[in-house]
Length: 314
Image (cartoon, rainbow, N blue to C red; front, side, top):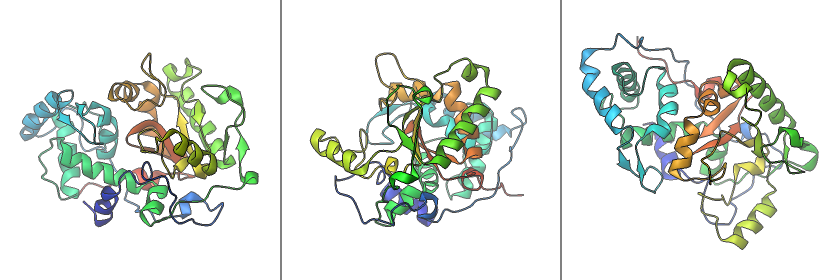
């Protein structure tokens, strides 16, 4: 793991939890992408076709397949069963489209593990996920700002634009974003609909249900409801920047679009909308918060340089 990755892990939920008191501010209206430096790894490639993995990775593949829905662990402090909810992000990071329980997946994972000083056995487990989690958090400038003790100020009213209700999951007047973020989101949705029939045929897929949140109102609600614990609401939320969006990637019947239950998050990570986002959102400048399939932050105009995995060794 990188030194920065270890530090990020120590405050993993700093941007998504904590006491209901803001940290030091940065300049109002400052572009969130400029608030912290982001390491820039090289672009990845596919390591192997799905049929030519080395024989020695068959056992790792068997273990990965078994643990896909049986691994008992608590990656975010609450017990979960299986690692399937994080498999799409892991696959994208290691540069493979092969099945999560295949030898080719295990081989690609092993190469990635060695890059971060992990045993290159090709088996997914808590240690591997902790590194993945740290790497993904490093790509969120808001998290890096929080790591530096800053709680970024929000944009001024003239730096925001109103989202039309026909582009929302649940129509509500007054939702806002920075104009450049709304424009990037629109281009992304247009591309998703053009490329995936299932998304094109669902007019609610990838619609917005949250954007900019006024910091004062968020803090007041946090204090009043006593739920400023990260799982439900953050004390210093990325939404204050006008660059964070919550998009509809589905939900389990009887729950909500932002329900943090494992059942709901697993359901979301199986959706065509989420799978497409994992593979393509970086083209439009968006990066994901690993715990919330619906939450994406704009670091653009393109996040290619901060989302691609490091090049495999020659």
